[in-house]
Length: 127
Length: 418
Image (cartoon, rainbow over all chains, first blue to last red; front, side, top):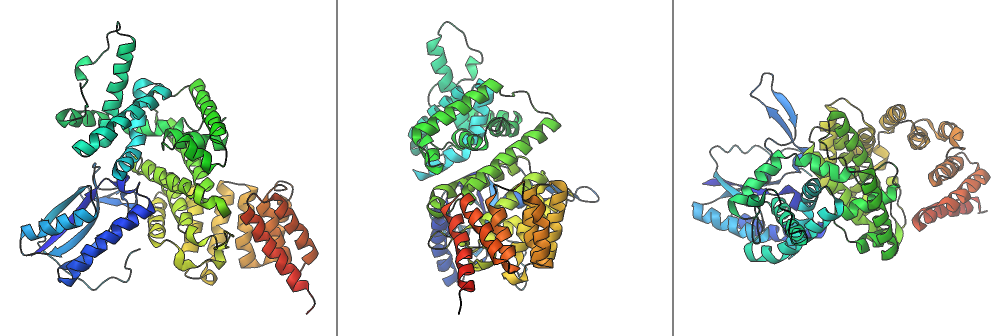
């Protein structure tokens, strides 16, 4: 089964990391990523830009309302996500624990994926 | 224990802002925060990080300081006694409740106030920055002194004087109305851009010492935009900082000499920062108000979007500078515009554009550097040399002077008989 691992953390804390601290976390994470990729379990991975770059379209009005900023103002923000293949929830939790050791703090929300529609990769591969 | 310092740094503006509102006195608020931080260093490694570090610090800082006040004036009964925690404080439901109340208490205006009191118009820019780094960012006096290349005692004195001035002019505690809030945002934005430039413009051997100032300005601008997510001026400010900072690794060569934009290795530009800057410009444009920061950011974006210097859209840059001249007329803006004009219409047109500025920019390094470059292109070597000599005399950093010397060397080389 395919699972989404949604990464939540306090943006003000992550934003206070020095470049060296940020690089160190990314380096540790890439070790876990490579292992998952070798096992054929790693799907798309995304790190999102800060919520200050976010725009929200509220569809409950007609026409929909465009609002600056993230959908919800929360203590921890959605900063990125993984799609990972796993046999059981326990296996995904192990994966999440491993990612968490490389990148402590915050929370991972684990959500089974209902519909997955992989399209050819877009031209821009992000920053 | 690095995570504790990061958490304290991240929580500081909100905690200090709330403590300042509560005690209505800057020194007391700083002491309260200091005491709360000391207790955090003891309690957090034991108990793990609290769910809401800022709420914890506010709660503990407030109680610790009230305890002290109570000991000093035992005869005075204090209000809200039943809401105070006894021991290390800030646990479980109490903390959650407090966090709720904090959210309701306008912490946005708390943080904005904290930033705003650092920039009274009669306080010199460098002092505004120094006091903001001390109060809002929590840098030590020694760290700030190091960045500004002065002694600790000189910086201590400067900050003490600035704080006395802030106290004298009175901290505005009433909740601001829309016009006051806009004015505060404008003043804070200007201060943050000055802070950014202190870090960004540094060259040579001061680069390393000052680079953290640019990072701090970006961090605080992000914080401000999180608090006021629909302010196009703050979007523009943050975009401008990010797009400039994205080039920082390519701006100086191994010897600390300035590398001009057109000679920079674009592969060393920071792609995520550029992406974030471009996204912010996109968002800000929707508001349809071309503020000065936004127009400058848009100019920076055109450079960022060009894969090579030759692909730069100078016509568009010239137009954006014309907009900037309109909304924020200044000789420096015209001087900058002339660089784009030179690319589009040639050095003679550019020189004609800046010649009327000579009197107002008589003490400005860049004026003579740019003028020398146009004169060189027009083959007026003797006049170019005079302009370059003047520029060297006005240079602020060794990197600036070294850069002009390269121009002079080239003049000499080109003039030499072959």
